[in-house]
Length: 334
Ligand code: ADP
Ligand code: MG
Image 1 (cartoon, rainbow, N blue to C red):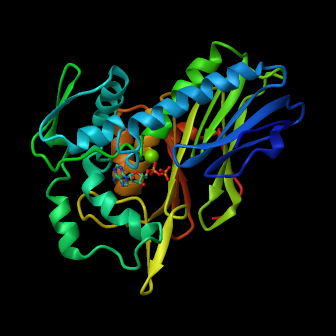
Image 2 (image 1 turned 120 degrees about the vertical axis):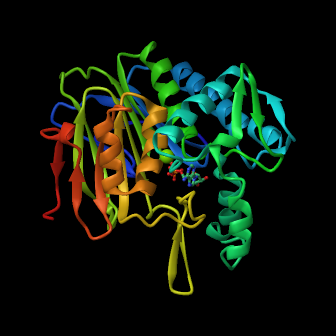
Image 3 (image 1 turned 60 degrees about the horizontal axis):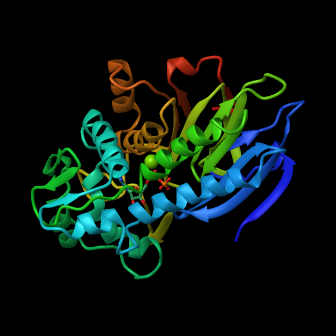
């Protein structure tokens, strides 16, 4: 299961985002494993003790055990089954509250309570059933999708109806990435954590250069459409090209518009969010993907949440928020 090897930064896995190398790049020890339904890569200085990797892996597995929808004993599965209230761990309540704030800022485009609808789509997207859910099934499930049906009383989370259910799929990896960075930064001088479409970087490399993160071209996912440089922080990508399935001439992907119950169709092929906050980067990349460019820019201008973003539109354009001027390099002509 675990693979540990030393290699240059250049060899890092190309997923939603990837790290690019520059001259004088330090050699890193890299460990890859699979958890939280994605490939996780930790890249740390060559002399890092293997106990540091082990500790981080343990932490990530504990998050998976708390929040997985497929594990019946996870805290979230338990909460989803309960009729009304459940006392949850401090860390789970923290994630729920922080994600709730992103939901509120984006008017529910990222919705914690998407589970009744997302669990309808998952068997089809995974190829376990042949047909997409029906309009009737979606309509029925949508009645429970509303984050104002959730409330908090200290450690207790309350739902307004028994069928209300939570899906942390769009923010748990970002939170875990952020916590991994926090922990590792206390143990090593610099490094990088990659969780599928989420990347976190920290510390100063020996040559003092910034980190350069490549962003996949959604139209040709084996290539990059550009790159972003940053000193530290998180980049999260949500795209229609990672998990999708075609049926009867229509392509369905895994990011649901909570207003319709169907895969979002906002004119974006992908969006990358850059933030100092890993959970916000993840949850917001899902929200902005659902909202589309114009609505996302309206949220940006309110300065309610601090972020930058790279938007790849369905017709091949690349648009960036003003704060990325000078930090984003475009590799494509459009
Ligand atoms: P990925 O998990 O591939 O990185 P996202 O971060 O965008 O992509 O999260 C997508 C997952 O989140 C879906 O698989 C589903 O479980 C859940 N989800 C889908 N649509 C939404 C939404 N509008 N709000 C919150 N969660 C969502
Ligand atoms: Mg997300």
